[in-house]
Length: 104
Image (tube, rainbow, N blue to C red; front, side, top):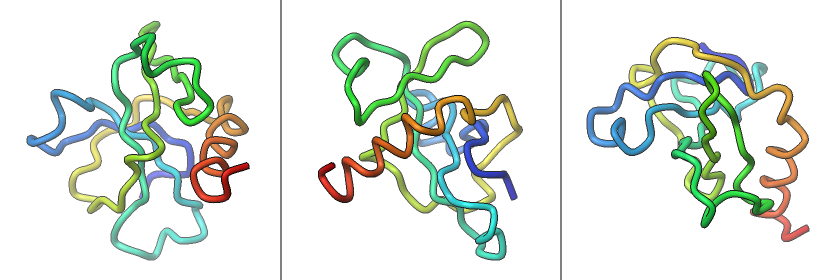
């Protein structure tokens, strides 16, 4: 089971081209479940970036945005290898979740 804020490959053939990676949002204490709550990462665009609900995440010197509003429970079988961590963006990701759920 990946850890919270891990960035992993998206192995789902239906969405991999558009969203090559996902960031795990689920806390490690819930590792016993067979799914993980994750948000897809899309290539950075000025239309999506620099908004509170779309934190920017850099992987191998390429910028992506976390599409927090598209988070979903995904089967562990569609999660690939670890490519990085968004731990340094922890507060931006939590702020985006707060905005989505509480409007704050």
